[in-house]
Image (tube, rainbow, N blue to C red; front, side):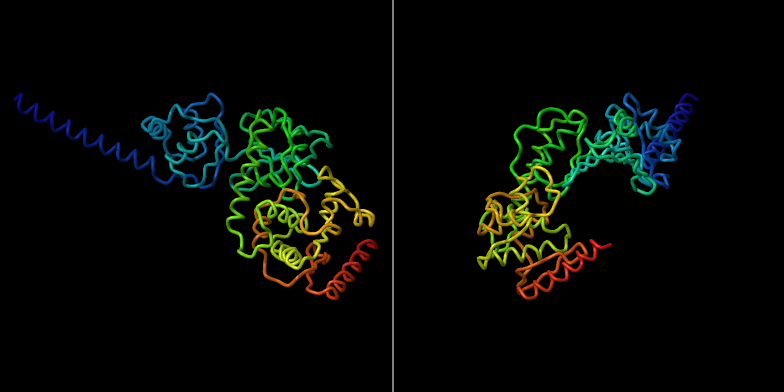
Length: 384
């Protein structure tokens, strides 16, 4: 009898173990399988939250089929205590495992509301916007000019939210003075920026910051990125590049940057300056004259005077031979590459064509005809 009972108990135990093993395998497959979410959501994890609250939120939004499996998966992967506060984009079909990784790997928000400080050539615009996860597009909530406009309530309210993201977007062609002055006015940053970096040594790019980030640290990161770009562009230079050093490349790139904002023209503009340098012609470019007047501190805000075009300054390329002594702005990667890998042309002239681009010419006669066309366009624009 005891032998029969023991045999039956053993059979039951084996069955239970098989069932338990099957349950574990099923749970694991559910944990790693594609999730039920059909439309992307922005999962907000508050400070002091826990996996239980997160799992309930995910269940309510239809992102996970079982909050219990979600919590067990976090526990057995030893990530329960690694939950980060923030707003996280959960894409359609995300598995529980992928969601766990997203909310425990980094505290950097990937959706929700962000404030972008756009440092431009003429002003710094502050934009408050929120990502719509369903369409992956941003909805603008407020925009104002930093230091000029009244600060809108949306900005103040968003600044008080713990999971707000902050970015500084540096435009191509800004001067180092403009960057430093903009950083001084951005209220989420702290500390003295220190000595102004040399012209051209800051990388136009997007920089993620958090409240309390040191201004000097932001400038340091901008310089590090630009140096990497300078090194990469110089390493990939053409054998017959007209510039003899990374410093000269940076100067030429800054002139290209200020002459055109059209990506497809950079190589053509670079070819004009390369041909002029190779032929011993003066560069004769207005942005260098403007820099000689302003030293990069502010915007000229008017046309150049004939006296300024004739006045000798270290940057006036109508007067000096070759390149000016320093860059005149901070160029982007495309302009750096164009400076040492220009398109192959015989162009030595260009002028605005009225469409936002330029008309290029190989001869002075052709250039004069292009200039006459531009004068006609200017006159028409003034009369309208």
